[in-house]
Image (spheres, rainbow, N blue to C red):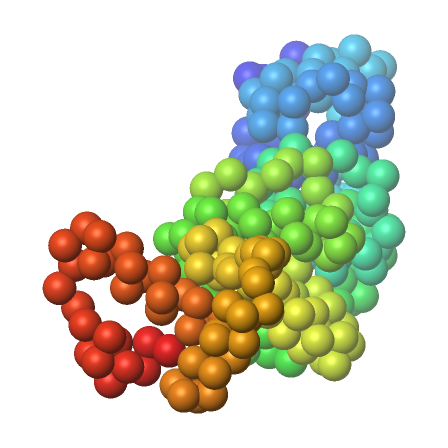
Length: 288
């Protein structure tokens, strides 16, 4: 869509602008505040608003020239982002959160799960020069290898186990360990990546290690409880004579009273229901 009253050369340059450029212009004009009701993924709508705004200006050609110059001084070449795989949700989210913290961009509302694009936008709109942005990107690249939690420490968290993933994500949220996001992950891959990124964002290695150990232990306890194998305490009143007999049996079998009692119950039940297993086989199998 050409802007009337503007030279063909400028219109050609405007036509060459991509979504990243328009995102930067959107923030440049402050439309993120005055037009906050426009969804972030409505690129065509944002583009239309920007064109209409420029068309209404008296000095539209000077404004466009100023925008293009400012853009060149604000957006670093995309090759500086080549070390990041856009499909690696975990890595992209870590970069985005790091940029948000470093540039104090918490006031920006993000409603997208595309952390790679959000990360680039965060760099673009930061009020620093090109050299400073490049330095930040290079430092981030070096730090990633040190911050990434080793796979051996997180292999117990399975991407195909949605029950475990939901539990782990809730656990981290309750302990204030999740990134500050307006959009929650929904797919297995997203939740798994967000969990691992939550570990990556912990700067203190010992603190991270203790959290993972405690979390893993808590999950194991939950699995045990859910399996139904957890033994519950019961109070069964017995005569002194019966209790003495249990104590003697405990010594004979060299097993706790609770196991002796379990054996007696199981054997009696099996005998009553025509079970075939004998007390000798039970004893040999160390059931008590």
